[in-house]
Amino acid sequence: MKYCIVGCGAMGSAIAKGLTKLEGISDSCILLYDADQTKCAAVSSQLGAQHCSSLGEAIGLADTVILAVKPHIVNSVLSELKPIIKGSVLVVSIAAGITLGSLENGLPQNQPVVRVMPNVGLQVGKGASAFSLGSSANSEHAETVSRIFGGENVCVQVEERLMNA
Picture 1 (cartoon, rainbow, N blue to C red):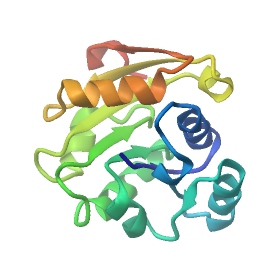
Picture 2 (picture 1 turned 45 degrees about the horizontal axis):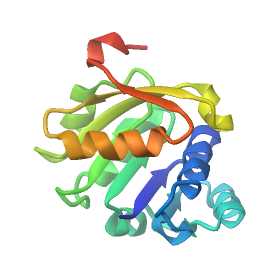
Picture 3 (picture 1 turned 30 degrees about the vertical axis):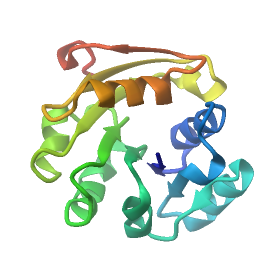
Picture 4 (picture 1 turned 90 degrees about the horizontal axis):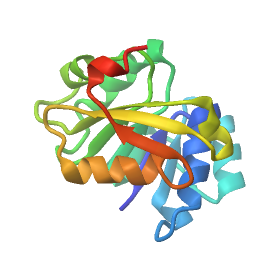
């Protein structure tokens, strides 16, 4: 399985770092993309992850896409994703305040989507995350998210109405 992280800021980098520590995930299975290519190259180099020079390149190789961008950028990223994303790709968003409905409306119909609210402790491997499944996400997707955000952290599934921020 290949994981693409869109956004190499503090949280995106922390998620990537956490993935490198998980058993069975090689560095080559972690794809990073950021509009700031210098930042992306630096994080990729530090972690040994694959640096993607375009969103299309990153999405084309991924099984799971993690949107680790600021909330005001999400709609722009979704509009870029919509025409190129495969229907089997899981889309995970950590953007605060962006609902599952908004995510699903910005993507192709039946795209599996999961909304995650991690806390800042994730940056030091001592975090807690809550997640909610979109209408096309299933128990396999829940397991994937639990693996990504679990590890040494706490990760629980909740109803979306309990995590609005």
